[in-house]
Image (cartoon, rainbow, N blue to C red):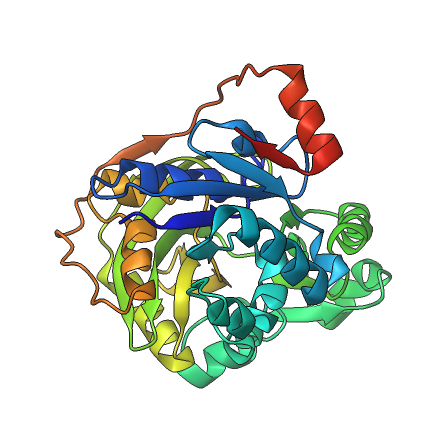
Length: 347
């Protein structure tokens, strides 16, 4: 496999790291991968852009600039890098990538992403309807357009604590109306509308990542969080084998006809029932765990892009633990300046 693969989401913020660098790490760990990795990011401080795993790196226009600006930039990069594939790793950029998917394919750049219909169906504000249709449990959720709701929520049967969620990312458990209002304004300013409120449930969170092949779920890797950041992102986790969770994820994938990577976040409530919290349309930041347990999902996705069958995965081994850590990259200031001024970091 000697493809040139571009990967987005190369940010490495400690409280909310992007999946791009772990995806690149998975490809580098694949014994048969001899291709080149091109890092794509939105900020000169995206640390993964400077990591040796990336032969070259480029800045992209922010998703708000639209699909046309993204296509123009990718074709500029393609002219220099001769890309064979691109792996988008952030939720907010997927609508643009879906819009230009056919044009990328025409230029010989492969992707493995869902359709616009599939993406919208698992949006946070539409998740209750999807779960009802598929017979999956999920905490009651409602859209909030008036922050004064949080001062009268008890009158409508919404008692604290409540979970306030952004349109794309972030969720905050709030114990008072003041906390909830502050969360509302913060999430709306950062991610736009809608802002959602969800009932808080006591229980234990379990996550699953895998690949939707268009026909079903493949390569499922499941883990239970053992340590989290302030934003609730996994800082440590251990693999588990949970047949009930795998069936729930398979129901989602088959019900949507999902094509692409995914992460399913569920809560096992104290009564033992599973509740779907979110379905994310990309690999999670903990995807390197898939490589560590012999189910290298990013590498397998390249097989799907080539029209090949999924590889035979070994049984998932429970009790394998990951621990995230921080390290410093020491670079010449000229590299930082080049990326800032030229939008490219070419060796």
